[in-house]
Length: 510
Image: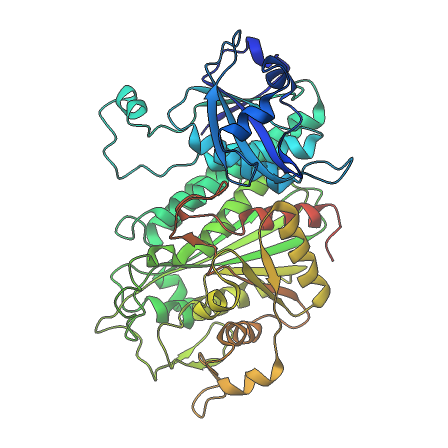
């Protein structure tokens, strides 16, 4: 991962491959953002005009490269767009800084060192720029032949930016140091989630995912319990077993327990972990299978959030539940029309085996409920209906408590993740009535994302505050990279979950 440093050095004398500055959209053209005063001075105060001549406007995501002025040890200046200038006396928005830093880090792939002279008004800005650099520099190159050595990798432009110095950061300032350390912990675990999501299903199955979680638990002092097929059968986890029945790779339920000696709150996180989703007997149509390695993004997010919380030493007890299975068609697979007896004791008529995520989550939600946590949040790439409703960059939030739902949406906004509150209309529940079982796994087609949420609600223990995050849209980016978001696995919801844990730790959540 890119190394981060805080630096009080002056931009002209700093040895680096490039100096990164911010440029915003002003009423009369581009405006050079704070932090780049030394660079602007070297251009005799005419840097904004030079950038405008080169076509720069300051728009978000825009990158303009120009030779560094005489006397600079760095040969290149990279101007990155911040979007609209803030109102008078206001600081630049943290998400604007995060995106700009991410764009610059990606543009500088192959470089050894870059100095970031972006606006660092406070520790929040330090954290935002740090996160942007670390997330923007991410690359998944494990399965590519990038050359035989590091020199070839750099020549081919494949190596991520090796080091980033944040100019204006104060190495001895406790808040600045804490901000950069938090950013490193969160970004490193988020990038680990991206790696898991991007790993092909022939290398990542429930067993290997469980092994990765076990190893991370040992490293970071997290207790890990893995239930295999035998234990799941003995415990009566019919949902997880039913989904995994068609695969040669058996299912797993992984429990990660992070505890703090002074914690007085307990947060449970539940993640959908379908390591590959063919749809089962209800096979997905051609063109819908190729990216289904990403159907474990919820479990990856929960895993990353628990480990990040442990690394940060948050004063809260967190239990993460990874409901892992591979949904495949075979002679032993669950059929449409089969009835599964869930861990809760309820029976479910399976009308569509491609509505499998809610089945594994149902067992894990009931298991989490048995510990009576203060709140449960589940995360899942659950429904295509949510993508139709909110698009590819926004996840939906449903909950059995309006205040809790609002708190999650606010937390997501605070860390720069787009979310939207969604309802749980009670009239849609009737569509899941079954003449054979207690409930069916399908209901009305319209409002399918809300129907899925209502199904999950049936398996939350009485009196427990619960929320459901449907990340089907933003979990996997099939388009080009933007901001600090790469192509492929994004790590959606990790930062929201970590922020929820922080708020819970200090008693500011619900």
